[in-house]
Image (cartoon, rainbow over all chains, first blue to last red; front, side, top):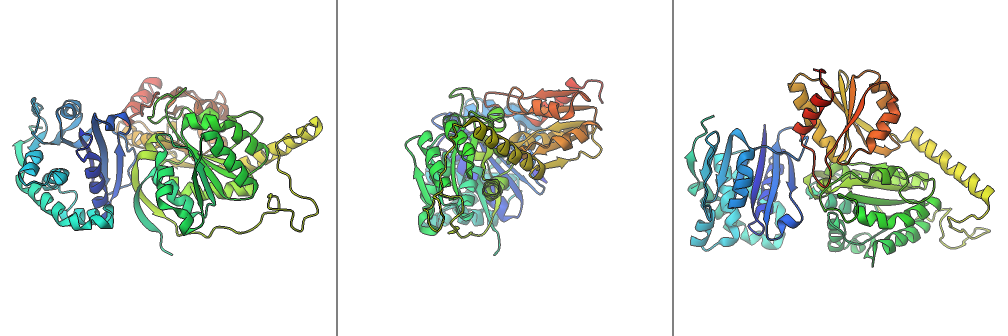
Length: 185
Length: 357
């Protein structure tokens, strides 16, 4: 089993940390993992993205151009990465600020309006956990219990009091993600 | 003691491994994409844990000269930088090689020349293996291809540096520095308190005080010294060649790649084999000494060799020197901070050795 994932959005949306928690969760599940960020100027104000590969085998190239799953959090990233999803792959996106919605028919598309939900629940800080909750619902390569373990491992102890809030956000993400289209592939 | 499992960036792994290897000092000046090494060590405050000194110097040149001083005292000292900063350190590195002192230097390389870019590149190969500074000298050059090797090569690097009293360079790049992977960390080693025979640690019971210098104005003496250095490099070439092979046994085409490119090429080998092309990969782990003998052997069995580097073609010259004219040797690489993709390498393999299906 190998899942090749790109997460992309604005710098500050928690793109890199979502990838990191995903990676930690995979480690907790005793899987191989690589986390490869686009670093540098892309992070500052512009778009941020990270490639996460989760696999039951040793990972060869951490740098790839085609993905099984794309998690997209803004329009620029949708424009950039929609063409990079493998046929039959999965696109998960937040509709907030999206003016041109996904157009490919050979991929499965899911929508998780996490920004809106985070605003409604007054927990904007765990916006990315709502998205991650959506991901684990549609691509159960990592399980919720391991995400919680991953959070415990990746967060400094002083933030462990925030874990229940994160768990709530993850569960909310699982609830609100919905299918827009099934792959015609 | 059990090894500890962590998820870390390559840069962080180097930093933690340095503390655990019992390093005495780290001197450095920040530069992307390796600043996490200095940041991690500052935050970890190893002085409290082991007595290891961590210092942000006023410049790269100051940092390498602090390393020179620490190494002269027989201490396990290291510095790190990225390509433009490593260029600044070259004078000091030549002096350290000339004074035959052990130290560890880390280059988390980025694209050049000049200030270039902050994205990963492998265009510092010549600088790393053919000198870099002035004079006839070599560094022992280790090329990690994973976060695990970033950690492991710190201790290995120190061991080799002290075994041969020679500077060791870890030649990495921005991709491995920034990437996070699983890493098993070794338990903490005690810092050594041994006073080394050659080090400048006070006269003690010696008849003469030790003097460390790279200066000898007598040409005969200087030539003798150079012969000794060359004999040492020959010994290193005999003993310390390291490489890894991936599906080379039945390969018709051989990829040669190190570091990040080797990771990419491992996937290229899988893809090529799915397309019916029997490709294999030889990954040099030491770039000096270079695995020339093994490449020569494989060169006698394969139909073509492709050297894949994130440069315009530097290591390819050493591959050519190894195989002579027996088999076509070609280069493929991307530059300027662009990392080659596995598919691109397979396409190149098909195009360059066309008819070779």
